[in-house]
Amino acid sequence: MIDAYDTLEAYCNQLGMTLNFQYCRRSQGTLPCRNLIGCWQERIPVNAFLQEHFSKEALQKLFGRLPKSRIERILEGVEKERGKPQPDKNSP
Image (tube, rainbow, N blue to C red; front, side, top):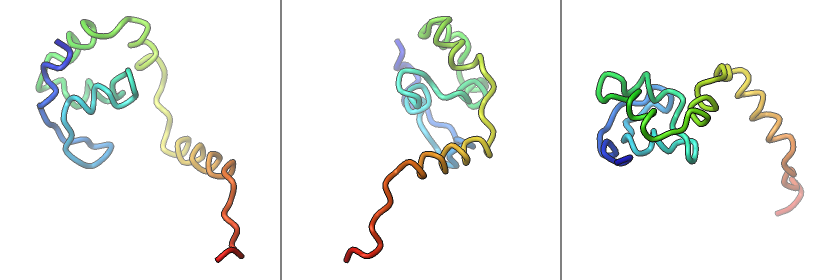
């Protein structure tokens, strides 16, 4: 069952709070968080879980590329904000 570990909780270094496994396994829509192995490997058989519930292609998509650096994520956020219409500062 894919939800067997959903109620277990662990501290997330990335978000700075405690989260349950369900959040971690679904944090990218249909894919788990990239940090799932590091955060959960000491608590559950996470590699076996991933192999049982996700295709090789999905795991390759998730773990097969280098993670973006913090500066890359910041620059992407800035670019995304630049594309949004800015509110009119003269409006009440």
